[in-house]
Amino acid sequence: MVSQFELQVPIYNAAGCKCTTKEDLNNIASSSAGAIQTKSCTLAKRSGNQPPKYWDNGTISINSNGLENEGYQFYLDYANEYSQSINASNQKPIILSVAGLSLDDNTKIITDTLKNNSIYALELNLSCPNIGGIPVSSDVEVFNEYLNNIISATSYNHSAKPIGLKLPVYTTRWHFEKVSHLVNKYDISFITCSNSMPNCLQFEHINNPGEDIMTSKPVILNKLGGGGGGEFMKGIVLGQIYQFRNQLSENVKIVMCGGIRYGMDCYEGQLAGANYFQVGTQYMVEGTSCFDRI
Ligand code: DHB
Image (cartoon, rainbow, N blue to C red):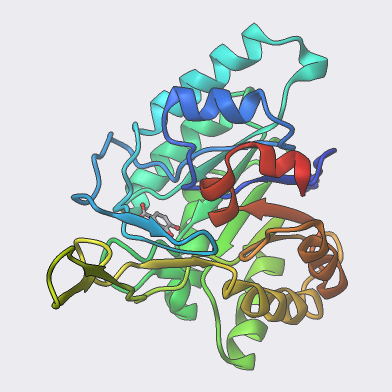
């Protein structure tokens, strides 16, 4: 039996957005978010890229975080502590975002997570745009082999925990067909559309007082930020959701991630076929009150 991905409250944070530290996770825990999604984690703790690595102007954002995270064991321990400290009926589901740097790393992380009853579900992120190389989920052949290997190497128990995939933005009908086939074939419980937009570049312009010359520079140190997000992503992710909804089995849930600022955006997500909603840039801008307001 494949366990269904079910949330009682449909709106929660996107992985990567203020969900790295214990304080971040506690803030989400005490908000109206429907789940606590962790930062994408690796086997070992990482400090990520050098700052500045995040920028927003209130409606759009760019990040080149570089997988800064506390290491997966920290998040498993946090989940245990959380589930012991809060009455079961008030607990939010915890979703572990997994972005191990190799198949072996992901196998280890997933195997250990399957044994942890305090983690509700896994969101496997094979589309991180900030670590170089071709993301696994961008090449359908590689993606197929990777999923095949990970499901068999972990003897993935689908009845124990839903597993979802955080997908990159796809641009061809061929990709939607092929990736839908993989999602159906490997009993994936949910997909998240979409990861942030690779290869974004933003400049800031500074007028120095008393000088005629304006200085302009990229807003983040690495210049190209893997992850563009915010308002401009909404139309893109609505199209992704619509394409996938028409090709996925009915029991596969779709999580909208991109450009959600208002309840109306979620309504449009539902029209396209989404079941649940992650808030990224708007949560960075507004803090946890966005979950209540939206
Ligand atoms: C990072 C960025 C992402 O968009 C993502 O999906 C995972 C990780 C990062 O740079 O840390």
